[in-house]
Length: 272
Image 1: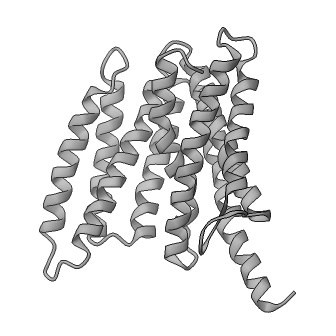
Image 2 (image 1 turned 90 degrees about the vertical axis):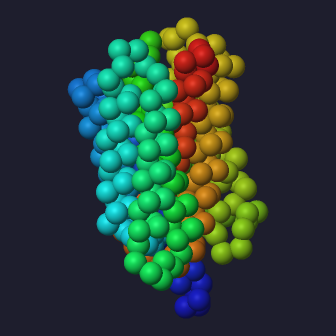
């Protein structure tokens, strides 16, 4: 093997293996905490995921005004969690208030930086996506509060986790057909990710009143969202161009955040 090939292989391992390991830890740990401690366990799991994503996103993307951005992310996470837990019945209405106030605060924060305000628009966009992501993770708390919420919470996390791990492992071995130059992701990994999520959803369906087509649709929807967001996270890793502790965290948690509202909406309507 030539040195160039060895470098490429190591780069692919660095891109995929740490992220796959963190996916297993994050989804498996959250499911175990929820099963052992119920609502308290879910709150702890979601809070840890939110805080990890806040710190990792700011480092991975190089947002300017990093201290203020971290503070905004933590405040949005706390506000979103309270908005999900305080109402007696699960509802998402108060998340709009959290996002609205958070975005206004982000604009003020970026505009109040010292001149020259380099990358102001890019940094504001990064903070806005961070606020949306931590708020989306909070939806997992409401998912656990609906009827059969414990099962819905576990199925959603395990389906997303299976999709992400499958995608990373397939793309480690065969990232073909390649979806974008410089990004070690292939169409085969994308397709098999969705298949893995469908399989997990069908296995979890056994013994429940959910029909097989409904369970398959649930898994396909979560798998597709998670796989596409994982592809987006890989763009962030490729753009960064060098190793960082933050990159695997973003790859593991950001797709879970994207899938959380989809899981809630489908479960609330009896799908999955």
